[in-house]
Image (cartoon, rainbow, N blue to C red; front, side):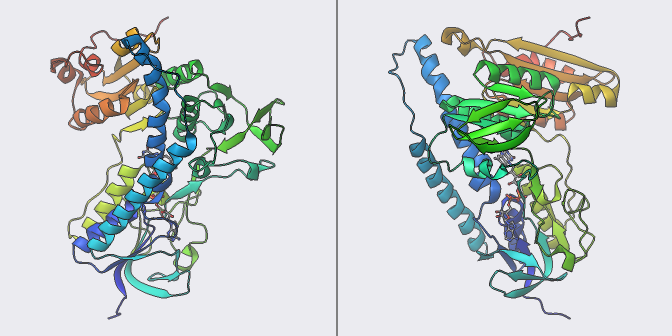
Length: 455
Ligand code: FAD
């Protein structure tokens, strides 16, 4: 029998890799994990966590403004970007240390190095060391996509750099229509930058319910974000204020910064996959089955590198299920359905289940319940922004197929609705649930009238 250096070698110390390494070690496996940048991965270092901290910072603008309506006298507030970035970096460093500690205290060997595959049961570190392992887990995540067809694309930043800008840009053009583009548009606008968002489609946030897409666009417009839709960046060049962006339509935009948030690609480039025969899809993602197995026995992949549903809780669940299946003797499949998600714009989106269009296509008869209202806090604040809540129920069974919220605390509300939906809750179950008053979420259990499209 071959003697391997490790039972499991994990490439990538992000959400999926760290969870898999820890759980596998807990089952008694001898585990090593290699991370080429910082333990914690995208989510902790340059994704969910620093993003949410910036979101919080951007929302104080509303708090200062609204406080006046509640009797407070607030002196003109000022904002210090370097102070925010310093505080954020300190918190990220604290979390990174916790991740490392969680690994070492579980007996996992941590290697601060890039690792690439070197055959089906071995990896090579940057210093040339070759390590063999009975099982290899690829958890290398993804990176911001760069559109090299755009002339002067090196003048643009991605979300990676946005977290480390030395000064808050007076103006920024953000390209993209996904949640990362929208969130950064909202963050920068809240902090005081002049923001334009350019997207090639007619509507941002493809895949979300149309009411959310329309309402959030309107809300951000009212908050000063300029939307340039159905257009694309042709070229970037140095301009008077920073970067001059030439658009396909012929117009130009001048801004201090340009940020590309046009998608993310799986980190498989230069990973040595050709030495193993592991199959990839056309986006460079690693193809896996429901147990995160690749086509090569002993090689597995979880998280964004597999391009299934690219969210942290999904990567964590896949990593955990992998460890349970391979080292814990209990095969666990990960089901990629009813995954709640949020867009942390201000106002924010929380969404779970099917958008109306998809529900109609897949279920035929559906009932739609929808409300728009001014949240209580907004009245005294003199704010006219409205919350939107929507439930989509199967016409035959009443089972809730989709729950979509735009407004304060939407993410928190929808996380709870997702539990009910997983349990098969129907509209009648929502109706039978006593309201919690006064709250915004109570609207979800008091929606009585079916919404019919105006003719
Ligand atoms: P990652 O966390 O990306 O970890 C992969 C790790 O592998 C990285 O640390 C990388 O340095 C390392 N690595 C890569 N190649 C090698 C190699 N060859 N050798 C050694 N190490 C290597 N998700 C949410 O659920 N909610 C959010 O609000 C959210 N916000 C986001 C905001 C932004 C700006 C971004 C970019 C992402 C956000 N995400 C969010 C997505 C989330 O961060 C990812 O889905 C999650 O991090 C995926 O985990 P992972 O383990 O697959 O990969």
